[in-house]
Image 1: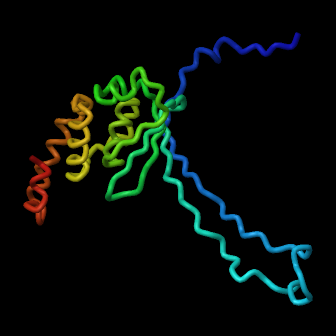
Image 2 (image 1 turned 135 degrees about the vertical axis):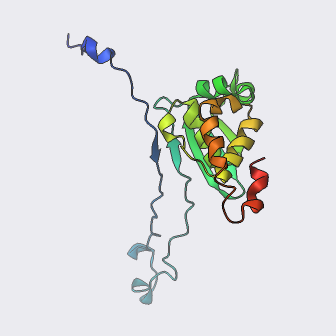
Image 3 (image 1 turned 180 degrees about the vertical axis):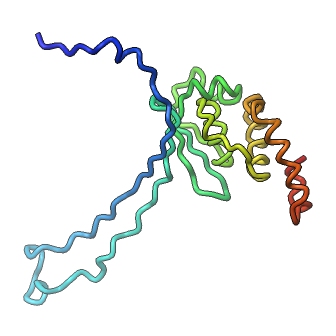
Length: 188
């Protein structure tokens, strides 16, 4: 009997949780040229199709994987940007947000669609999956504004407590910038 046996120390290794981004691409396939058997007449052997340009193909949005055992696809669309696809653990989302818990729990969904800011949702997902190195140290005012809106919408403001003091202290530097009054509503 030839059974594979793993060493016990291999089972004791902790998995690494790395976030990776994989971009999908679609290869363009040229239109087929007509064969000689399809031709009819003496001039048709040398005739070329009128248009050999391949039809435009749709570009798939980038996919960001937050966990190696991701079981939920989240498509985030925004009127200001292209759609982004995030692969996440459903259990991580249900733990951090009662809104997501009600949408995911006891349902056999594999795709969740959100109409929100993809960057803000990505930061929330990094925190939810304990990938703290991807959380910005000094987010811009626009990032803070979008994070605040998303956290309120999905009831997960508690995720930001470890960073709140540092992030708020950075708001004071905005007051000295030119045109700060144009953006001050975002700091309120």
